[in-house]
Image (cartoon, rainbow, N blue to C red; front, side, top):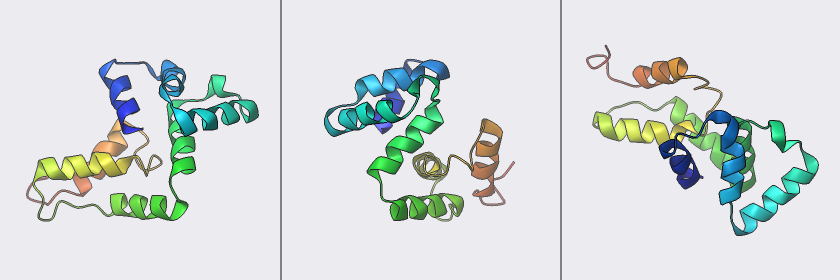
Length: 120
């Protein structure tokens, strides 16, 4: 999933085309899973967040997702350098799409995890 998202970002694929291009990149078991999803849902109107949540819910145990979501919500800089914090923030943010709905909420969540002397 990370690689698919990276490709879509580098290619600057617009939101409305992300799902159709992403499922084209699925292989093996994930491709079979997508074929099954297409028979049960109208995927023509599916947005990226829905696709990502469906894929993650199929390949990650709920307990792991909950743990990663909690880890994201409670993520703070502590002893990390800011670039490490930013990387961890980005990695864990996919488990909490409802927390970072838009860029403003994402920025606020990021800033809350910074030490007071670093916040702007």
